[in-house]
Length: 239
Ligand code: ADP
Ligand code: MG
Image (cartoon, rainbow, N blue to C red; front, side, top):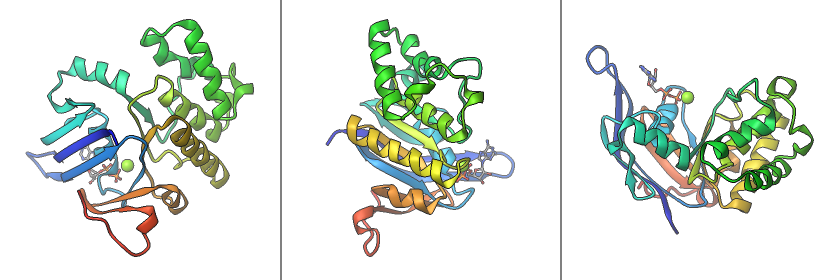
């Protein structure tokens, strides 16, 4: 299997000079292509901070994060922006679609920024809107869509330019049960059909049950890392 993320001994402390908060402590994480991973733990355990570090939205104080053979902790701010654009897809709790753009334009944007050919973009957008079951909403603006529909579009946007992996921070937190379940169906299908690697944080037990690997954080450290098939009775060693 191909390694997608190799994070080694990463730590992040906020307010180091006043009242330090050790949000992420000495975390090792190895993720391979095609994994479908839930990051769980109580509020304040460091899930968002860890995802932000893995996605290059924030820098660790210590440690290395190797993505696609590149140590992103060593990149300059401009190079990091460029790296994110080409390698990482993001889904946020609050959808973050651009309100003045249509659903289709939101999904196309990154492909345009990356200079894809128009005909290729058109094909990719159609495939994705079929996958998220919103082919009839291509030209609708986000405000006219439900939360669940907006989040499905956010997932399509994250995947559009075929990143190395998709990070989703509590993607179902603002969704009702039915929409959350549908979103997970779609993420699981895209994981299968496109081999897309997903790592998502969540509080929701129903979402946790859908993951194939569950990593639990407590006070910024990995307290368990188990594959779902053995989750009931056996812990795998923390890498
Ligand atoms: P989770 O997503 O699991 O709820 P977070 O990663 O948001 O946890 O937060 C982990 C810890 O770091 C918490 O104690 C939080 O208050 C703190 N924290 C997060 N972001 C910041 C920040 N920008 N400045 C200071 N403290 C922060
Ligand atoms: Mg969080």
